[in-house]
View (cartoon, rainbow, N blue to C red):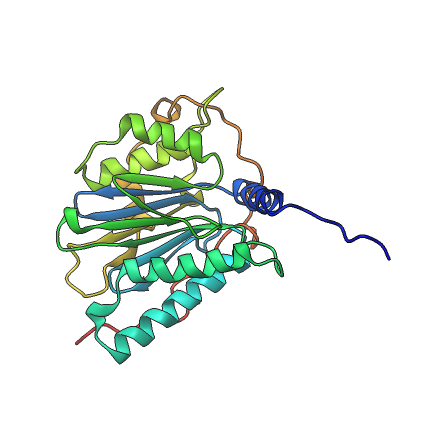
Length: 275
């Protein structure tokens, strides 16, 4: 009888972690920035129909990087959980912390299970409060770890380089225009070489805006509004860094494997606003 092949638990977990990290690093980065009136999400995403940033509930948003089909399953599960909890109890019982804990349990279980591969995803769960001090941004990794972020956060792609730029230039309480230009400049920052200016059509921008009068605070920033906020741009406006795209970046034409599902018409419904 042959001896079964043995792998130590430490080596098995290390191999699974390396596998997940490599998959996540192939995509493009997503940046979350807290500004005076809410939380801003910016990602380089040429697709106009497939999104990395989406709404979960009234004051809660979801952003992800990595393998599309995996984080889309997580997003849909979050929408269903929020709808059921808000319907069965009260809309105020649906919180970003509760959703982050649910995602952490799911990701941790999948990562530690030997029966399936780990999810190649990292996600943000953000919730805005009545004041900037009440805003919450949670970052969840492929193994279920949860980090409470403050000010700014970045995941996926060249996250270390982008995070370094944000660390140097972020200013607390900045207006939306400044936060957006900072995030776009950080995404174009490659660390070495020439700067690059990301085309407006390649940007996916969304906000959780506490100044909106309706209960649902999530909104996408597109078209003339995005152009107005970005202002005049040129090579001199880009941060010092390389012009190279990160590994696995999609071509100029939209690629279904690179982003996240559907525009407002294609997304699963969320709970209707209170009358």
